[in-house]
Image 1: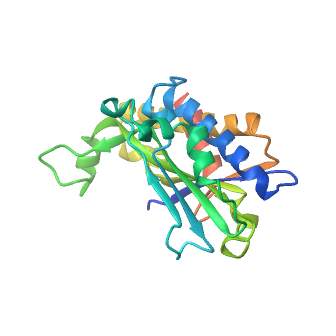
Image 2 (image 1 turned 30 degrees about the vertical axis):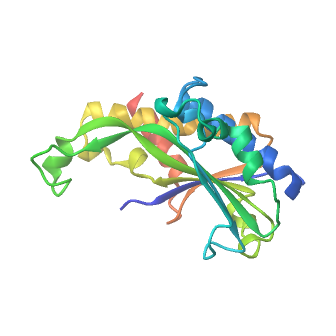
Length: 228
């Protein structure tokens, strides 16, 4: 069963005033991995930014969706989606009971069912699936210490929400060798981002975890060892 995948990050002696710089650092590392170092890639830009007061049940007090395509290369939206600009605008008003969320994208290998079959209703459909690189949404969230009753203690001062873990954990028994290699590339990209954050963002600890509590990190490493 698909599970939600997260990466939680904790920082030493963290203060609310440090949050914009910390968010910028994590977003930069994500952009480097997502865009393969190409600064003109749409994967190097923020796609949306929102701020949530008090807890997740509240309506955002700030929200901006950016246009990141070739047709809008010179528009204010595209220029505003540069990481430093997007973070500065969204965090202009810092409040300790607010969460600051930034949506980015990267390309992951995902299966598409053949046109003449129901989507993965049976094993044969999964085996015949065509794997394609597709944009996948990632949310990077910075938590004020008072947001959601101090949930940062469990979630981290910054949490990365990858969405469902499907691109990384499809079981080997249900896929062929080519699909296994595609999943391997997804896993390598995930681990590259995690290690890059650890190396460059000044964190004290990190935790890659799933909503169900399954020990995903060990499973991903074991998958890479089987495929290499």
